[in-house]
Length: 176
Image (cartoon, rainbow, N blue to C red):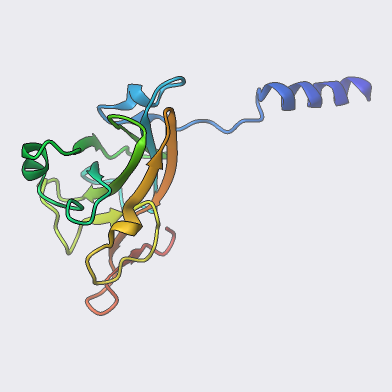
């Protein structure tokens, strides 16, 4: 009996065999989310409608005038903008990493480009923000996208949302 208790205590203390398998971190910034990395955001994307196309994270300044602004304008003005793309994995958990220039407050957008055309298709593509608030039919508000990032890796879970009907707007899938 003592050996069983000792084994349980050792497993709990070391995390061996007790920890769930970690998801593969994808995206061109994956190395920034490795242990000891950062500053970066690790976005765990849930509720994907399917495994088609690609995924994208976009980082914006946390300012109303800059939120969802065209990237070329932000870059021309010397403001923060970063984009990371990754193919949608065929199965398993989905964790996408995006590095940030320094600790601070940012706005983060995740999209699921299902048709692969690299242009958001309102009728088929998905979107999500750190707040996970139901998007509906209105333009997302900055407050829904804001995330505070420290000097290490900040983890967030984003529930993807897709058009559920013309009257109900964007919302999570049934199992998302």
